[in-house]
Length: 108
Image (tube, rainbow, N blue to C red; front, side, top):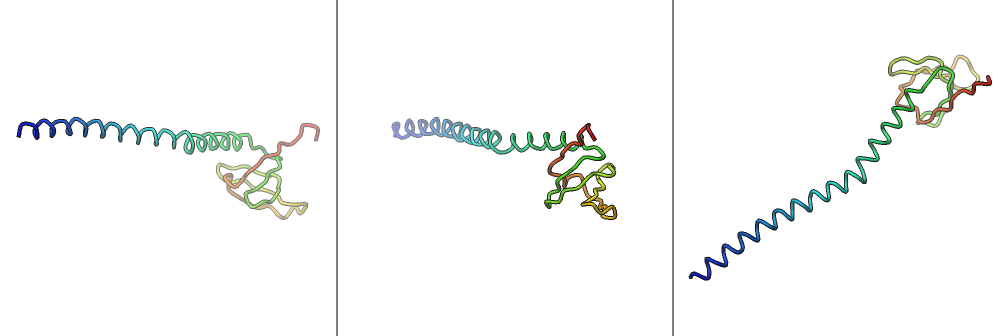
């Protein structure tokens, strides 16, 4: 009987080590996920926000739907864009739909 008690206390110590190893494995998995998924996405969001802050009237833009236009007016969250040569085709759109900005050259 004394041997059964000793072997039971040995498994309890082994169980504590397995819990620590499981927690360590989960921490490593979460760390890898953060470096591969969350960190690059946050970096891309910062670059996009910086791009949108440089938006100015007269800049050529590309929208998320693939249309090219020229910025006519800028409000807080809305931009009025003129599409094509037709001066009557001015459409308000959200800033978040702008994918690319082509700055107006200083020669014009």
